[in-house]
Image 1: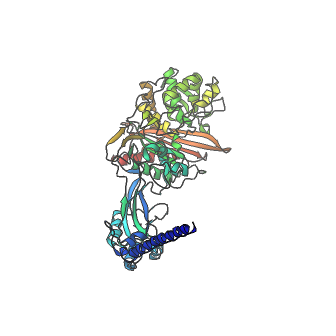
Image 2: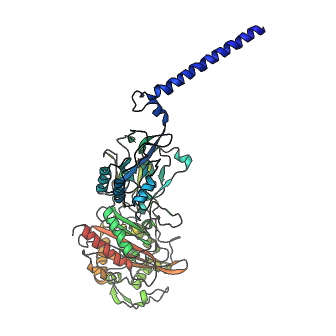
Image 3: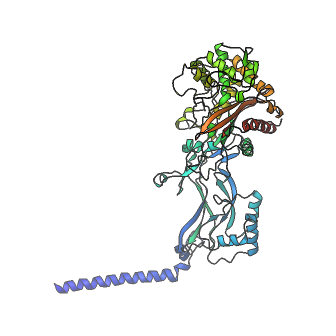
Amino acid sequence: MHKHLNKRIVWSLLILSALIGVLVIRLAWVQLVLKHRAVPGAAYTMAQMAAIQSERETVLDSGRGRLYDRNGRPLAGETVWTAAFFPQEETAAAGDSSKLKQLAAVLGVSYGELESRISGLKEPLLWPSAGGRSPIALTPEQAEQVEALAVNGVRALPYVRRYDEAATGRQWLGYLSELAPAVAKQSPTGLRVPLAGMDGLEKTLEPLLQGVGHTEVYVQVDARGNRLPGSPLKVKAPGNPYYPLSVYTTIDKKLQEGIEQLAVEAGVKEGAVVVLDSRSGDIAAMVSLPLYDPDRISPEGGEWNNRALQAAVPGSVFKLVTAAAALEAGVTSPEERFFCSGQFGKYHLSCPHGKEHGSLTLAQGFAVSCNTVFASLAERLSGAQLQAAALALGLGRDIGWQAADTLGQPVLRPLAGEQPGRIFSTLVPDDAGARVQTAIGQRDVTMTPLQAANLVVTLLHGGEVRAPRILQRVAFRNGQTLQELPAHLAPAAAGAVSRQTAQTLLSWMRLVVTEGTGRRLRSTHWPVAGKSGTAQTLVKGMPRNNQWFIGYGPADHPRYAVSVAVENVDPGSQHTATLLFGQIFDLLSGSSGA
């Protein structure tokens, strides 16, 4: 029995030794012969292929959908040229210093900085901008210069940047934020750190904007991170003819930027400007202040809040509603005369600075914004009549464009977050004092700058309330239209004011500029009409003012309706809202070729 066991052990050892011998011979064959042979279909030998450890890539386009203005100018997702640096081959000769110096000059950096950044580079590098938050944007001429220098491992490549690193008043765009790791795994883009919309259109349109994958450029490197000899740059892209989608807004980018500049130069710290196309009701520009940087969002600062959609106390702008209610109820007429001594005598109400207006008609009282006139009207009206007129004019309720079962969403609301404002904070009061304060735009009354501009459009359309629209079309990548988003109305359940009342109020708004509180606007290139407002508020216990001016122009052939709200200013400040309104119409007249 022991003899048979010993034989089995001997044979097992012989077989094992033979297998080891075969393996040694095979390894020697690979090391001495095959490693110098090229792999079929590849440019490298087996030894080189064995040294390939990974690819080094950089993303040029996240694949997220683009947002454009009404003229096709990019608002989010602009393609620019940038300078891309890639790892060098291990045996590559040192770069030509004269070419590197020229390249540094093109990039606007020192030769030393360039050399230190690219020396021993192991990962692709998109040269950062001065702000350092995104790759540098080269002009076409600079891109040509980078390519002409032909520096080894350096290319000028197209890159899609989401934003341009500039502070902006386009809070309606929103911003992006990194997804949580668990959610990121489910992202269709394939990015390791995918981004998602956190506010504005970026959030509202997130399902449409996600895309189907990113575009990247990559090179093959060895175990030491050096580029493989002769390894070309390669591009991976989804190759989908339909994505990313293109979303076209109603915004005029040049107008938006021009108003942002005017508002900053005017010293506006808080507030908003809304410009509507008076014929369609579309939003041509919507500026919120303070400006925000979508690449650097501060949750505590609140700059990303869109003040154009946030309700504030309007002051005498609300007298348009009071006048409409009184005319519709038949409790007054444009020719009725009132007497203003500067003090109403009740409810601690007076005209500003106790100014005495004397004997004046209702139309004149509107032009000079006489509190006595409108307090008298309020005593004749009921709270229900004031509220009904406000609702009929698009106040105290949501008026932004929306559509059901559109683009895969149960309800598509591009201006999500729009506040409805209010007329009364509780039940409609029967108290005369409450009605008087409400009639002059104080007490509980609030409205948004968007509602204020739309109020003007409503009057220009004879009392017909239109829903302000910011989106007009969504298209596939190949240009084919996915969905048109047509304008629509936003009527009130209580009905509308009459065309005659609307025309009367429009004529009085012209009187404000020719004879009333807006006389300083006569220097604008276009004849304009409007209504001023100053509301008294308290901010952290300190008295502050909200300044408003809303109106339209040209007065004889209206093209735009504008609202300007300058919030939380010192009570003694000049009326910046009126001045800015005039400057905006100068800009509008110039951009229209008038």
